Amino acid sequence: MKNTILVTGGAGYIGSHTCIALHQAGYEIVVYDNLSNSSREAINRVSHLIDQPLTFIEGDIRDAKALRQVFDAHQFFGVIHFAGLKAVGESVAKPLLYYNNNVSGTITLLEVMAEYDVKNLVFSSSATVYGDPETLPIDETAPRSCTNPYGQSKLTVEHILEDLAVSDTSWSLISLRYFNPVGAHPSGQIGEDPNDIPNNLMPYISQVTVGKLEKLSIFGNDYPTVDGTGVRDFIHVTDLAQGHVSALNYLEQLTSSRSPSDMAKSVGFLPINLGTGKGTSVLELVNAFTEVTGRDIPYQFTGRRAGDIASCYASADKAKVLLGWYAKLSVAEMCADTWRWQSMNPNGY
Image (cartoon, rainbow, N blue to C red; front, side, top):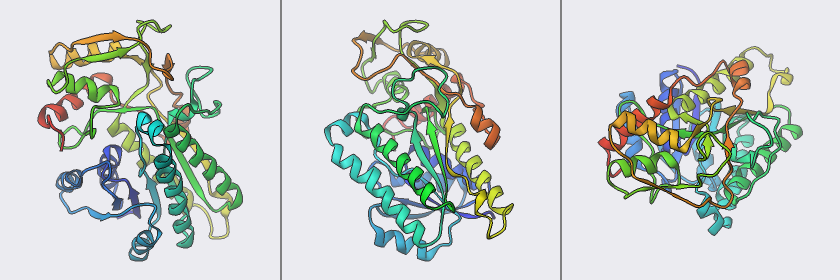
């Protein structure tokens, strides 16, 4: 077996898929999640899919005492940090909750990691840190800015990680900036399960298709894009999960190739985009879903939403060069796996 990894927020959408990828790559996994925005059933299903019990601890990243108990009980190589609230609208309504959980929680986690000399972190960041991009595709040197507390909380954590790397060069802090994760595990056993009406496009489309929601509202059809609707970089969640494994492999190779006194080989703060490098419009995604499912998806055009941008897609060259990672799955496969999950689990977990 490879090293042991702490996965905070491992019961969530991306976290649960990453646990499977980590297991397949030979890592030992300990999941730490407060279940505020996830389900214990996801843990049960991951355990079934990997054919062994998943080590799961219910706890909050803001609870330093509970974290210390976890670090006392395990010898970790590093942490993959997913634990965070992620709804843009809710963040506008409850900014203190988002800063408390996403920022203060991360500081507590980093403090405990430092106490136990665990200095390898893969952070779940977001393309929202780029704001409205000046040029496309977006690479990691693009200016960063945010228009809502959710995005600002991710950007604030990135600034903290940058400052930490400067203050102590023994840290390796990889910030993976996701574009638009969609899809589900090909088994249909785990997938995206929004607590309420979905905030994201793909689960909304799938819930309309399964009859749970009446119709899709498309916000804006007058953008300067291929068909007037917004363009985004959709990435299959299993490709995304593999990106985390590639990041850990990179850190492992770095660690194994240096002497104990050679801290120069720590990566410091390293931001990396995870995306396909291609944009897909809202209408193109709707049409792809219709083609895969053979079902009509009723939709209506409404006005643009405040803060929405016309186009956003990644330059994924850095991930390919450094990590040897690139997205492999097509939009059709994203739609097919989403539909399999949704049709098998019309009410989620």
